[in-house]
Amino acid sequence: MINIAIDGPAGAGKSTIAKAVAKSLKIIYLDTGAMYRATAYFALQNNIAVNDADAVSKMFENFNMDIVYENGAQQILVNGINTTPYLREHYMSKAASDISALPVVRYKMVDLQREFAKTHDVVLDGRDIGTFVLPDANCKFFMTATPEERANRRYKELLEKGQEVDYDTLLKDIIQRDYNDSHREVAPLKQADDAILLDTTNMTIDEVIEAVKKVVEEKVSKEEKSDDAPGELKSFGTPSSEMPEKTLKRIKTYYKPEKSFRLYRFLRVILRPLQCMLWPTKVINKENAFKIDGGLYLCNHYSTFDSLIPIFTMFKKEAHILAKYELFINPLAGGILHKMGAIPVRRGEADTDAVKAVLKVLKDDKKLLMYPEGTRNKEGSQEMAELKTGAARFAIKTKKPIVPMVYYKPTKTCHKNYLYVGEPFTLEEFYGAKSSEEYHAATEVIREHFDAAREGVNAYVESLHKKKSKKSDKESK
Image (cartoon, rainbow, N blue to C red):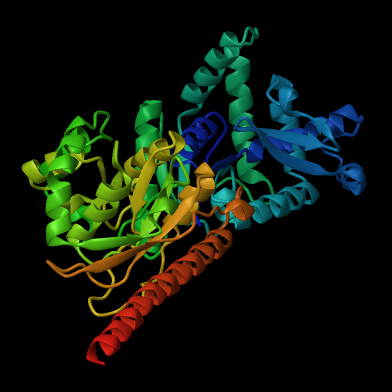
């Protein structure tokens, strides 16, 4: 679970950065400040003083807040009324600061925020997210800038909106608000001990975004190496950080998702007969692979070459497959893989580039081959390793079907093998899932379909052995 806490004084750029980071990492941005503004707005509309604790407490007796997302934008409804269009008026800043100082309001909002963060991967910004709201957040930042710089930013923002404001008044309000926020009794503004300080006074927005993303990706990769972070893809093994910087830069620069598949089609015609001769494989229920136009094709994995069989057999016009970064180190091999449609995946890291490439492939109704174990099967075993949740996340995010495929045994040169193609299925019951628990439950469904495919291929091979045995018995008689 990713919980990113961004704290800091008013005008430091917290909301702008939080929204951009959430969008880049494809996780939810929860506008906590808007929740307080919505509460203040509701109080003002009902002629309730925002600094009257008793009156506000009574207001909560008939108070219901819903947070919904429409076209990716957060909307806050209070008692069924959408307050969002009114929350950025200048007078709302002070009203929100006053009402947020009331303990009854703080605890009400914090309860809502904590419950939301338990089941969603989120970015939250405010003044006490890392110290009070989400003290266990795995990524914390304290973002600040000089009062003059913050007043100047706000001044320009309001002018662009057509509002006439006085710079000196804004500066005075910011200084006063800093004092109020840092001296309030409940959860005052301060930097958490484990938060990273970011002074944005002389930084561009892009520089701040990259600084935050870098820290998040490093921390998540260290803490959750055995799991796939939401909206991200993790591979397993030697981290690409151990590769030379020059190699990493070359791979990232040149090996973007392939657009032209003329070379792939040519190589498929040339290499397909060679594959049939060297690694003869009977594909059982091949028709299942063509019941869908695009989606995830998941397969167990024994060797480097067994990926050629489903690609050459089922991906006729163009191919897409996730391949580890190490295979792209050699420029010649990397170039061929690229033309074959392979998408490089950084190992042991949160790889947002690979995620974007995968999502685009699936959203374009293309076929993607992926190994859900993140590693190979043991040489002499039919038992699959623990499935990672990445495949489930992609299927849920794009609402695309899954085709399970299972090899009977390791692919060996000149030894006949069998690849069983199961019925396509979807994870429709999990569409909209956000929590790790839901992703793991969806992954168990994938496991069940793999188990069914395993039973199918074993039964098929067993039936062949029985037929062969009966034929031998007849011939001996």
